[in-house]
Image (tube, rainbow, N blue to C red; front, top):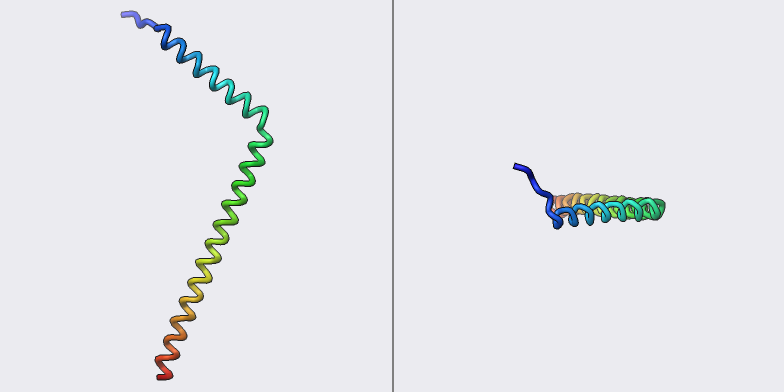
Length: 77
């Protein structure tokens, strides 16, 4: 049995190929801008992660100090 390629499948294949070509062209034209945007996003994410780590560390230190203070107050009472 021979498989037939319908005109609909051919249209879909050609449309997809053109779509990929357009994306490739857009990437090549705007490659520097895309790379700069990605670098900015990475920097923003890294800064957020550092901020979250610092806040978590501060909370841990504050809770440890709170436990120490509670222990001292109990000992004083």
